[in-house]
Length: 367
Image 1: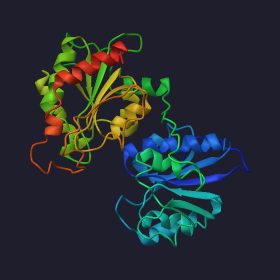
Image 2 (image 1 turned 45 degrees about the horizontal axis):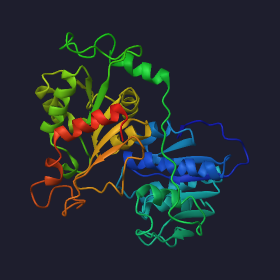
Image 3 (image 1 turned 45 degrees about the vertical axis):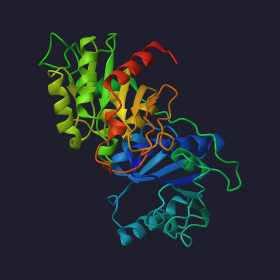
């Protein structure tokens, strides 16, 4: 177990939230945490979640304790889940709120003997939940609405008002990543004459590009388009930072090659925590519909969010500064990992010039 902000007073309502497994969903789950705190200011919120999401929870002041799920996503691990539930009995939680809809996710709260176990029916969980909610997808059209609604009484008016996620970043954490990645005095030794690194006292603008999307290629804007945006902004004196996981390294390397090596490539070099802290230094973020897009939104960044196969109405960036680009083709959203028609026009039809114009608009503050 990993403690986070263990300052909740004794005798308050104790809530265990079983968190989602995806980065973007975990960011949106903060809206639930904030809503719970608004309703029960002194409540204690613990979150059971995959270990790699704990760094996000550490940046959510509403969370008292993060508990690492000992099993990888997709594994049943029946006995491990039962043992985990039994180990949580001593916490004496008043309520469990289950954000995943799977049967297995309901096992730990059941065996923890938590008196109120709230979640959507999903996978025949009637016996494991005793506050089973029926999900009305026509009423709760957004993921964040579905999360927040679980924290409300069953008879509450829907759809709910959803607070915006807001990750907390400290100056110490920012300085730590600046120091670790040697962003002072030069962010790119290969191009010292063209690229001056970020320092807190400088007014250099930083563009963060997030070319990956874990779900599949039907959510990824073309790499050559990202490269064109990178070249244009570098020519204007901006820094361009590339973010992503190990799986995005090849794409990032291609972007950097086409930008003559003047990007700073963080793909595969950072933990999620470090990526969050680095992104907090950026001025503008261009991203596919991905977990990092939601991180940028929760950091209150100016975002250009590019949607292809997914629905911006279902999982939008929860940020008033965000600009969404979606062509709204008849074939979209299809929610497929790969384009079933083989052309990905929903993405290729969004031009670099459009994105560059949106960057200009966000910087100017125009509507």
